[in-house]
Image (cartoon, rainbow, N blue to C red; front, side, top):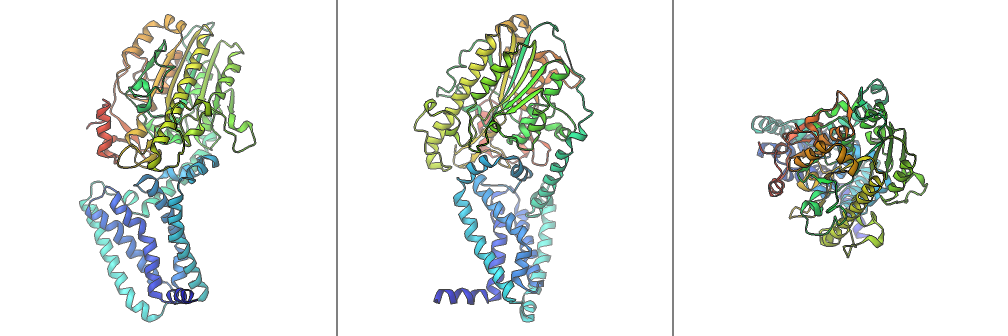
Length: 570
């Protein structure tokens, strides 16, 4: 009873409530002032100006509880921001994070939420009691007295002036300081607007793209049988591939595979699936990404060139451009949707049976796009138990103390992908015809690799581990015999720097002899005039920026240098 009376007395003290409400609202600003790369003026402004505005709004209100409840959208954003900071250690809530809310299927979301329990507990402890206090004060009509306002409002006014002064200082002293990017929560509100705008444009895609054409045609003999397969992996990072020099045997099948070329210096231009995959399977890249709202994908180019086209995915539809580009095919299948059980979790090897069924049709021109589930967390669920080569592969909770088992499970997924690709190549080889497949991953992954303790992908600022991806080409004996010069060019280009987001599309077109005004051979690793380009990354605001301007840490540039990846230096 004594504790209950203490709580009631606390809630009836308006000064206590004012400080409590201001404290929970300003927490994200304080943390971001330490995590974000701002100068002293930007850090001061990021805390002082929002605090002053909250303070002024509270003092101008009739009831503190109602004022706090009116600010609930910012309370929600604060809770979301704290969870994000727990997960990625830095950065505001990005546009891509809001888009992920509608493009991530519930199963994936639950796999991640299970490992965010500490952050969720913190949020609950901070905000639920505070909301209860606000509701209690509003219901009891504990309104502010004139004396309270007289005492605090002048302080709030002065603080607002100081906040404006700090904003001016941030503009003067900061390099490219922008309110829409650097001042929380204004930047998050701007990102919400951007997310809503992009969602609207995506919904209008059928209308805006209906007249698009690649004007594509095949340059190969019409009567010649040929098969081409594009394989998009998931969350596979190059540094865990034995072909890349990794010390563990993660590529026993592909290592020494005849007709295989591996490109060790490949970077993705995005660490998010809903951006990177559409760039891989269309003519869109980081430098022209917004053209995605009226262009179609590579499947349409192959259809125009006379190929039968198929899209087979081991992921569920997620209302993204992956779905839109995939359903352009003559036949498409999201195999997880073959069962009504939301927990249905087929392995990637199920895709091979679908490929076999397609090849049985014996068509002369076949183009297939496969979208794997690959190495997506939760790792040990991506392969059958009997395929656990590296053990122990549990527990795999998202905590640094479990890194050893997490890494074992992750390496098992790479080894499983190796077997998948090797079996796919063998299937094509037995067709005794011109055939080729290309593979890359949409992005990589952090697995508590260094002192930063980063985990997963899609962080607002990528790490080296999230953008260095595998890229390989395999061709059949018949293909190498018929296109020996092209194959030798591929081998000559292996040591060059590749951007998967630009090269994947153009390489596939050249391998298949599909010509279109949108094909640029200087971006194809099968072309003699393929050339290195400066590295860029697609930012949250859909801008192609040099890697040195997106906030990556010095550890990431050291790793790029260690792995002999060039093109990012100014």
